[in-house]
Image (cartoon, rainbow, N blue to C red; front, side, top):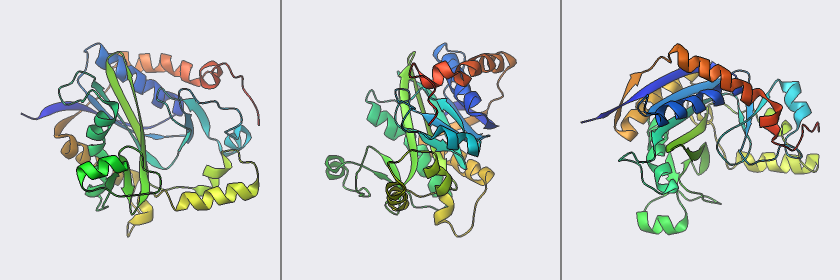
Length: 277
């Protein structure tokens, strides 16, 4: 029998609200109030999410971020800073002890990322997983690229989506970005480089390693088209039914309260102080 998960379409929210809602969903699932959840959302205004342990000072150009109207937020998961702009963002909340979840973080990542893989395929994009060499030998097939990491989504040898995972209160939170369009000028203006020459070299290298959905399709697709394709992809890839979920007032109130934390400089800058660059 197919399992039913909640599907929450949050629309476009502020960076602080987006991270707050993910945390509320984690708390509610941990408490047994809701089943596993798949959530889709966008960002308005655009945001930079920094990894849980990442330092802001010296890496992000805060003056340019302010100029572009891009808001900074620290997320619960690790990794480096990510610009969230013209993209579909997903999050999955599921118990660590769920029968379909491997104990290994890497293997659980693979299981959940099957939904992303099938989402690309719903759009007619031949995405594949990238795996390290030792895994390729075991699996017999994988797309190779310069610096393979665990189960990245690749299209034509380029990274197509980025995800991160954390485990708290017995719950796996995995969320990630599916770029629809990329504004490379904005992207590289938001990070600090030793010189313009280094910055331009990094931008040229990036175009060879990363790709957005509308870079590979014959026609541009909208946020809603991508959302529909990935909803079908997650249902197929995870072999689940998705039941539309409307957050109750209590949940929205909790998110509003947590939003204050994600807006605070204390949380975003984590003891390093707010450093204007």
